[in-house]
Length: 102
Image (cartoon, rainbow, N blue to C red):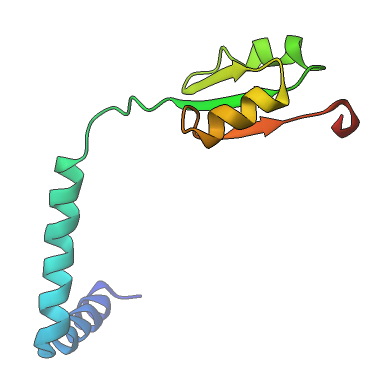
């Protein structure tokens, strides 16, 4: 295609778009908000997710997972202690993996 034809089509589309002042205002406002949010966000994220887990048959595999960045595993020896800690709010989430699930 000829660059002058493309330029004419782009010019036509922009004039049609900016005739509606509401769309033009919302577009500019959204771009400004996007730029502000981009600069306000932190450079790094230091979140660590803690998972309470009861898995008597997976102790070796869980040791490999505990080395993952951003994940902290807390092993429990009994299901009752895991339930108690989750209900009391000491742990956010708990998982029980029994031998039958494997």
